Length: 306
Image (cartoon, rainbow, N blue to C red):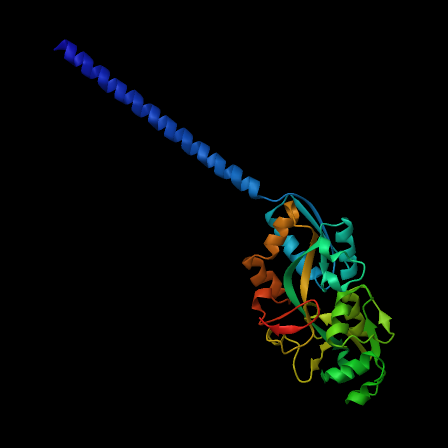
């Protein structure tokens, strides 16, 4: 009987040891799993430096996205510079920046090795001719707009406005905004001489402060009453009219990389194309998500239904 009790006691102790070991293993595994998740989460955070240059029309969008990205990834440093689409394309092709922003297809710029670059269409930009509010004109035909910018119409009174000389404010040849405006508003005709400015912000300031001035800007710069955007043939320059293909002056916003993007450049471009950014920052900044477009364009400028 004593032997039986001794065997039973030993059996119970063995069970307890095995149970305790199992609990310890479970606890250890749980702790290890948690640490793994924390480690994975830390690895998901982006880090490093990224330099982006190019289109000044794109700068507000990319800068806003970069600031939000850096808030979420404190170890990432993203510098967003302007300089024009030509500059962005040249610099990304040379490898001096990781991303080159452009309002035009790389194929449209002479001297750019387009085949070496990868196109990421991150948004659509609408562009409008804008005037000093005192000129007294709010709507213009596409034909008359051409005549204004080629110097054939020199006074606003010819268009029913104030008796005031027209002052042209242009972007430089390297500007994608200029290229888009010339292609879709002027049918490729070269603008007459006027004031030339590198920055869209400066163009806006000059239009607002110069009597009789007219220039052209992305919708993202037309957010107050300091300048007046012109309707074309009765069609207002709105995102909805661009989406439906009714307003003619628009372009894709391209972020080019030299080859397929990797590292921080890839993470940022994926972030820029995410639903979160497309439906918030893209629209808040006055751009149009690519997915909202009902029409499309190719590098030749031909527009068709999606």
